[in-house]
Length: 382
Image 1: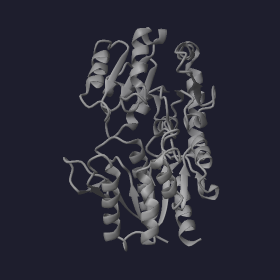
Image 2: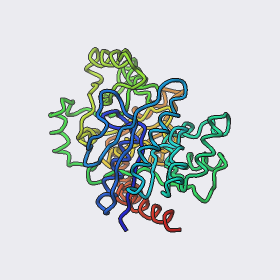
Image 3: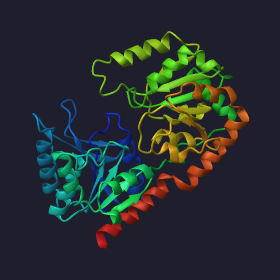
């Protein structure tokens, strides 16, 4: 039975957001299954109130002003939903933060069902019940029909918060395995030529926002200071300027660092067909300090590119040390250097094949969409 789903994401394109990126990927699969999906997000002065993004209607509500901005956001969100109360069955929030928790009461008032998906460990639910806002968040979340935990760590956080255990569902993120797929060696070398990358060196890739949490700046500094970690590897980093970096000072610093060390690394802007960078790479590095279930690791493994990651939430489920990649300790940078000193082309090929097989069996976006379809129907008709 086709359903009508309103998805909410605080940040949405053209703003870079991993949660929104995953939401759009899921929505495309749900749309193929016959469901109708529209998006609701927070507006910005330079953006229109309504537009169509990748085939989906996107509605932007006015942001709040003053000390308690959430009051204005919640009011505008409710007014939008009330005016469209006959158009939707499910209110699905990509995020379980304080602001997002309002989907529970709104859906209950309008006769819809609701889901919230926690996107970042030790973040979405941080401080729940520990303050007045935390108590409000807890009260609102108790009205939500299903909680989505994209990692085992987040499932544990939901349980520890005291929310109903029977509503918690461990459903990791998914990846489009038809888009993110390996290419033959001849095509890989052709892509390197097109992208201006060295043909014969090992290419290490890192993708993400240039902010404190993603920590790619630290990786670049380590790479330069230690001459590519005393290896022949070349580092390619891709990502946008952080929303936190308002003046662009950190972004500019990293650009200069890359341009001054072209023999060791290259910094590139994000592109729509980001998959070609994965296909040109040999190995992926995730130096993050915190995650939920990183899309970039899913995309990398799906592209048959093994990963070297910190043991953050989600990544610690995807990477089995020595099987689909390697784990390293941020507090001991030399552990990353040791990995590069011993890794071989045979290791990379073997781990890449194993990782791709694991993704196909457990993390495809098509399989995830079927799980959501089942969950939507269960909460609607149980």
